[in-house]
Length: 252
Image (cartoon, rainbow, N blue to C red; front, side, top):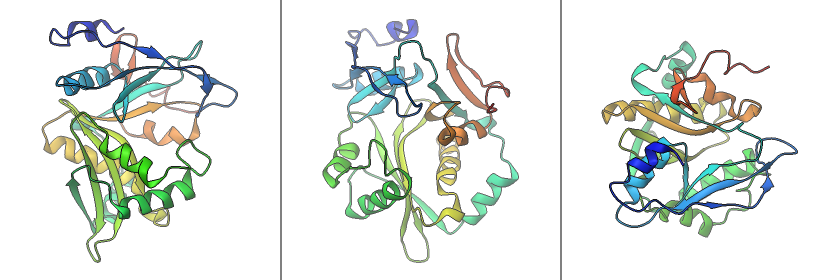
């Protein structure tokens, strides 16, 4: 366990960690994955969540988990340094093309409208993934079952109020953590996935915080290439968080 984690739980008991059985890796073919996980619960759930996120864990409902695969360290925790973010011409174009969207933070109350958008997104983009069979009850559990400070970020078209994108986002002491986001697959020209990250950078700065946590990045997984394009991007290594070297972000 991370040394800082041991030192910073405000005198509370160290959480008990568990290890999953091997399962097929969702990122790399012919690989298996294992995860170490613990439960987030009780009055100190937010404190523990902040510490674990800084140590490379991710949250799924009331569980915090981290890859613990035998002989593989391909999954790397990454976060954008918001106050040093470098906006490119392409990013500015994406912001301009979505100027007709209004952003609103709403409580974690799942709606039929959100689930309908999620189902369209999954069917178009991830119909063979682990969430392909998600039901309305599954979605409600994903949104509602959180012991930490969490909100839904909705993005609606000003003209007619249509919901085009949404992100389940955790509020951390030092930033925002994008737990899961989805968007209208028919609005490809808007680059809504990238737009939501750009908006989270703005929201992080408005809160006076430092980072946007993007979860895990795997160099050999093409679907994760977009994360390495946000600069500066920090990665979590044996010596803590450090800026990703330019060479690491380039695919072979």
